[in-house]
Length: 203
Image 1 (cartoon, one colour):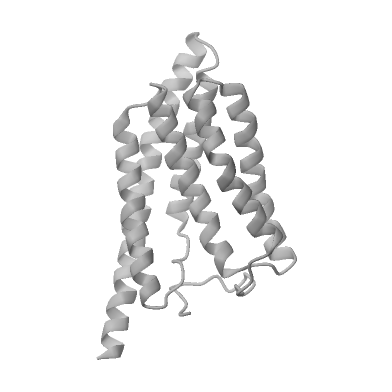
Image 2: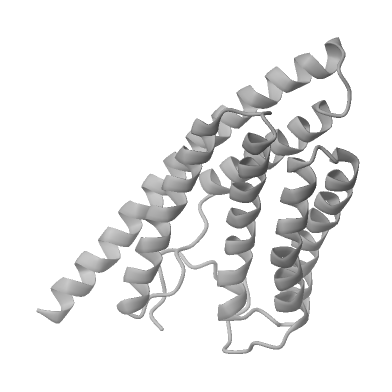
């Protein structure tokens, strides 16, 4: 497999291994996403926050385990961002279904992820692995997760504080979507550059 641009030289090399603890944790995170979405859609926000907190804690845990015990795998590098994107998309879907956020946010986030999914498949056909995560993408993902968590929390009560929190969370979500798309543009440019270089080298 060809390496993408700017691979972090401080991380252990990804290996062709599948049965690892980090991969199991990532799979459990993916399995938990429908339950989180269902709880949000049904306005069972306390339970949703508990499951979401466990999922967020496991996200940090699997990375620590992978690096410390040399269990960084190629499939893990794919599963982890998939889990993040599925969690964001499904949470926004559930928030829209519950009438907490406008539906256009779901469309914009979904369109960006669909375009990147197509790009990943195209790169895979040219034997490229996943693109390196850009800090703008991390910032956008973090801001969206903060927004989603705050929106869930704001739905617990109906008072002035939660109304202000709801508006602040929506604002954070809009900024998160903007960063999400900026990161998407960066990834698309990187992917096109790799494909162009590959095409030139094969000529």
